[in-house]
Length: 464
Ligand code: G6P
Ligand code: MG
Image (cartoon, rainbow, N blue to C red; front, side):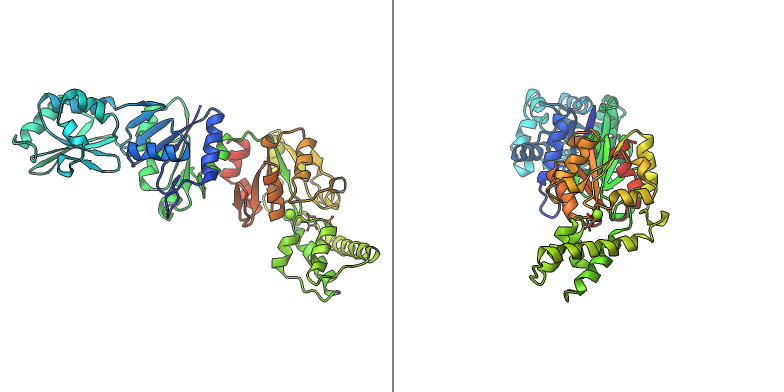
């Protein structure tokens, strides 16, 4: 069983307003539906976590405090045996105390918190009431006591487990803190038989991330910590849902876009269109060209002419299309091994080796020709035919056809795209996507195809 262990502040709760995002919540609910568990590992108190759960309908199966104590498991509130041991000694010897929760909030009679009078009341009440809190420290103060601190310290040290540290803070205060306090230790202690996925952003999460079977570090973490953890196997993410989706996906095939993903041919489309556009006094720029990526030849020309509201008779329109393609094919003369984008060949080899299925879903009618020229056909199981598909990207049709072509369901594939239209098509097809470049709606974006060989993609596809 997989358990997602997630820190709250800065991780699941997004800065600056510390709110859940709906994509994160959705991904976690999906993970739970598929049998995974979700736990919160946070310094926040149990009361606050309960509130967050009620607000967002996302139930934590396990809640761990900053000190590593489990405070909630499914519906049961529990208190660590060891901490109960300390409380029992204190109560038995009539030593009054105050308690702090994981978020360092102090419950004390000084603050007139309604909790403390009960703590100082009957034994029964203490046991029941304290169950609700994640006790991090027990502080004994002379405020409540006239007994010498040394005597109190002796009693506790003699009676309690060796797993505590006793600090005389000043001549009025002793603090008792568990020696093994940390989120990481708790995970090791309680969930050794499960696969733990830990996600965090701060030094408090460091150990938990390192001890997990797979750790994730948020991009907003301090650079030093981020680099250290990445060097030790953690994966960097921008959002929690990325990690959750990567972990729960069961990917059996990959759908590739061609131009700008497999082959460095997007630039030739641009050069050819620039030449064509010039004849109509239209100066194409790279920004506008982004709108042409993933878009069919016909629709591209409509968009270009639309800049000047030009409408051509069908005959002329067709001959311009032909001309553009001739220019483009001329550029393709230059195609060679070097035109395969970084990492793609190795990635295709890995996919073949792992028996993953591979399809190409490109709007280009030149796709088979390019793939043959690059000697990549042997890695590809299916090429969608854009000529037989009515609606182009951003409609989902070509990706649905590609998945069908390799016999897989929408949740068994991931698409790789360099265009916004393509990522939107995958999104509408309900498929996961990896964006190349800065795109919206993708599971995550890579700066270049070379990063397809990095750990996150490997984990998503090969689970390694
Ligand atoms: C890809 C490219 C587009 C191109 C389209 C049609 O999707 O990203 O820029 O317009 O294919 O290509 P074709 O080779 O058929 O003209
Ligand atoms: Mg493309």
